[in-house]
Image (cartoon, rainbow, N blue to C red; front, side, top):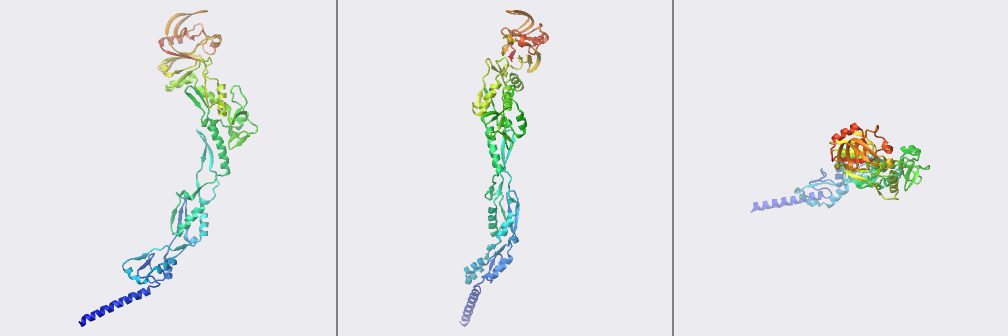
Length: 497
């Protein structure tokens, strides 16, 4: 019993000693960090807040901040250049005050490793000065707008580059340095960039472009059947008088041949070249700022549209692509429209005092021919140029000068699409006041046909106007013989001026 009592006494004494030691350490850790405390990888056990702060500051490292801007430009702010410092005392003091020194034994079971941010400080004025030296903040006074021209007309090219906002960059850098960040990428964040301010030159150019664009979008067109010739933006751009054309425009004189020569459109009026003209950017305007349009070029446009409808041009298109509609005028001059009248109507459309689309009324007896009606074998009688052409298998086989009906006596050969309805060899052609022997005859339209005329020494030119036939198509004997041998009844014959 005595031995067991001694053991109990020893055990009790040991426990008391351990409790005493534990309590002594608890008193020891009062005001210092408890056992097993690691802060920012620094062993701080038994250290006061001041002592731990010195060690953390000594071992703290921050090199600086790398900033990336929109176009990949980079700027490094060295921490030393902005007097960067960091102090941990306040956080360490708070940690100590919240620490229970007598609970240090729990550290034997759990980790006491902590990470704290500290309180970074730096010279904000130096930071601002360093950032301001970055070239991306250099003042950009370049223009945002540039007036250009392409195949579709004039357009305004906008330089939509943005400029970095210095204050927003600075605030972001301050925040990043305060958090000891090493890099921030602001290249894609649009909130840090502003749209550039328009210069006075930009505003002036935009005002000119608005006028140019308004003109380019005027609606004016010539319409004939299903065919429509509309002036496009590039056409109006071509008609605008520019500085390069100033001298030529000033020298233009009125002309009967070209009714647009010497005249210019200025807004809703037609004028001669003004003495008090102005230059806006590259454009010539009147005193009121209306951009001048060349009427002579507008006339050329109208005339060019009408020329596209010329019978020979239509035939050429048909022979090239096989799909053209062939227009044939009922007028003896072969014209489908009065160029001067259509020009005047077109000018009225541009000025806004006439319809935007002008319907062209074709002369009486005019008609159209689908190229497919001709096929690949046909005869063309071009009475305006006094030429006969024969096509076989789509290829020109025979071509020669002719003489058609006398237009001065009202015997002009009528236009139309006909077919060879008969062939006669050695026959006499009879009329009220004539009887003529011919060797070869191809009947085309009632009493009108293609035949040789041995009594003629010359063909072509303007003979038909004063010494033409009674309506038939007079041909040289040798060429008529060839034509007669090749052509069968049923071959289409197109007669036109």
